[in-house]
Image (cartoon, rainbow, N blue to C red; front, side):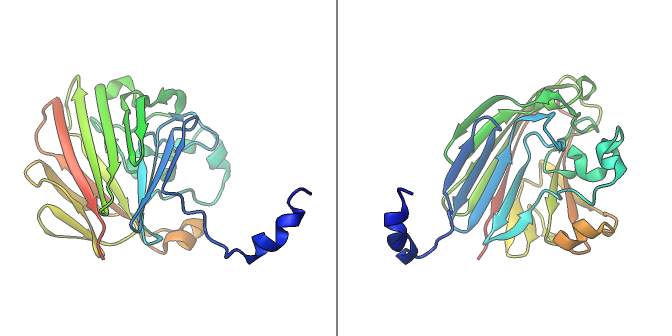
Length: 248
């Protein structure tokens, strides 16, 4: 009622989308940042959330309102979605989110599998995702930092220490755009690119079955692309720097 006297003024003001430059939700450990047509969202938290996916430390990138590096989301609900076999569904698994696979293992479900040492400042989030993986993965620490720059750049740093390295770790990138890997050190995603050190990482695109689920196809069409960047060698300690670059 107190706003009734202001209705005319409110209606006279042109409607605008609430495009916030920076958002931090501390209870959920979710960050968003918007820069120059670039939109990045990242989460920490736990793998024990309502309607959980195993995705602690994952992030997504949109460019000019279009998805580029994505979270596949969830398919049509079935009995399996809410049963003990929920995590047999690929969309629930960390191996199909933008996350490391460590010693061949993905993250585990449950509230005890969580991020730690979470730090946030505008456009920047740092956290240790080691606690989201099972003990058998042998992760002493995996500190991921995502920093969103004002020039259309997203810098990602992976600083890790393992107790054992039976299988080289790899970084998964789920893309909504068909990748072009013809230039070493560059994965072109349309006019945008993932940039990496080819002396440090080898890159492949793993084939995925065509999307048969009606709900997923309604969002992505027939295809998503799973890019795998694998560390060369089996050192138990390492630091990987890679980058997403906005194209125009």
